[in-house]
Image (cartoon, rainbow, N blue to C red; front, side, top):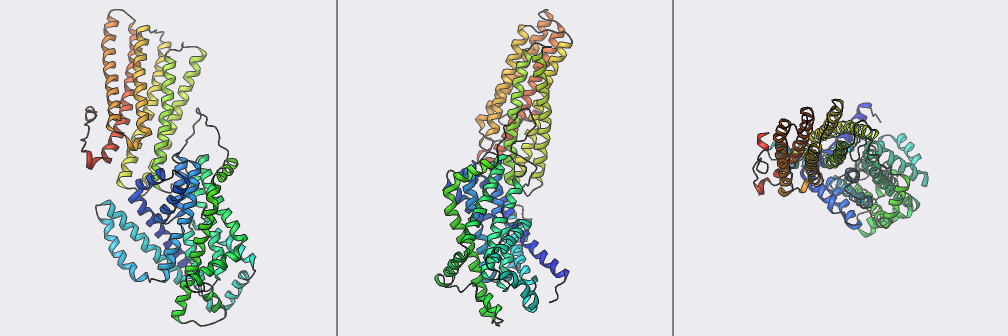
Length: 606
């Protein structure tokens, strides 16, 4: 057999084409239904049964258990899904991945897809040039489907023909004729291959080609498929590496589910495969899955019709094995969900958060597996950012009434400075993460969300800067030996109270950004007008009070510096509200007809 390096690279390219097809098909669907997928995962996991159904449906749709479980890891990382429910979704995803096997097995052999691929491509490519984003996404989905089967066809065409090289076939037989040890070896091979290419579906396609060419028996093929089920857990693990402890627990739960499943199947492997063979051969009357291997091993020459029939039996047998194994594993393991949670909690300890250390809670530098859904993590992190800055505002309110030069004043000032430094770093990290998300394949709505979140991220950091500026003003006041009277303190307290109320309203809006209403926004705009009016009142009275010698001019300067800086805080807060209004208007554009700037008359003037 003459099999060169070029032939091997062609085979490698065929596998890459198959993987790229899966990626394009998955991303096309995520772009079409990113928000709906988010809603399904967030709301359809109220109990274990619904979680399992959700996992099956999502995985069947996007054709990748790795992608769907990575989404689950992201949601757990973002605090949107409890750990126990995430386990149920992961279990369902494991069953849903068999849908891909059936597509490959049935359409790859019963239907000659090569006849339809180019016409499908001719139909899909013009769609990606249409203005309507929905048609573009559907076009990408079809193109991914075409590439998937082109890759499968290319794999079949470029694998070496071992029948023309008896010595290689004989050497392979040494590893397939070692009884239970062979099963263990090829289970490990299937696991390692899947860990490298990060797709159990691609491994299934490769094993299917090997089996239908008579390289390996049905029993060995099943062992490799079993190994692939364990190896597919590598993607969620990688996705969780930079996440929080809960994300790591969700990924570990998926690993344990597949690993425990493989262990019990290996313990009863021979009778289990015999049972699957009976189902395919006698119950479904599809044919003996192992007939092709047995006939070719005996050196029999098969006509085209017999070869095709036995290939179909082999492909259906492999799909049936994978489906029955995953279904049995699900029915057994779903009752032990709470035990899984206890195990992962024991293996991965949750560290206590230390508020005065830089620590991102929901986002990380790990894999961005589903850009549409990674936006949710950034959104949750922004809420944490805002909560931290709100605490900073509380420190400033305390600092105003703390005697300068004391130990308490210096400690509080040091904390404010530390929080300001943390806020700078948080702004950078969240912004960098959102920019990475923006580089992904996003829908127009998702791009708007990212742009708005970037703007909100910057405004929150500006709030932290203003808080720090007020603290610095208090220090300068002490250095200048200026002193406030009760009137000054009273008005500063009123101003900071108004700002604190505006901040609380802003946090409420951020916590439910996807469901914000015009009433929520109007509260923010009204509070900002109160802040502006009070600033103007203080400015007018300050001039009169200085003229009437109620307090020194020097004190009046620092007093108005603080009041004006507090008013800037209100401006930054209302800018966040403006961003929420933009999202609400875009969401309700076709129904509400809200004009730009209608809720906030001052918006267009800024």
